[in-house]
Length: 123
Image 1 (tube, rainbow, N blue to C red):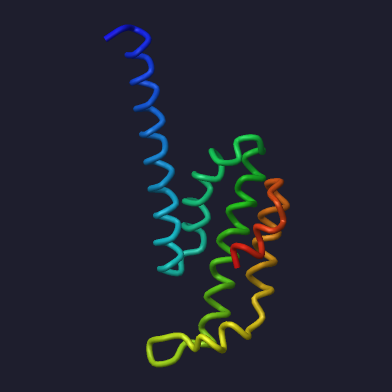
Image 2: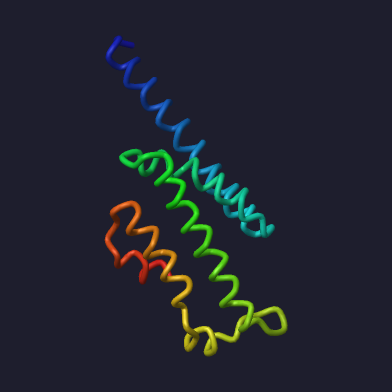
């Protein structure tokens, strides 16, 4: 294997390792959210957001993670009112006010410089 090919393989492996690390962090964030552990969710999402939004200071990337976690917990608050017999009232959910969720996604979009439509598409 040429030196050039060896470098390419090593770089590819490094990218794969980093992608796996970030994906695992996002999964930890969702699991923490599922357990109701807001701070752990924020910490896990922050790992991915610091890399994903590397153009931002670390404090801003964390603010984006906080907004993401807030959106997930706001979603839970909206959904709980429409939970019945282990399922969701789909009509009730369709008619409900999702503003608390979309607001947090708008905050996240604003922090990272994302298209504001992200908020509506993510809600």
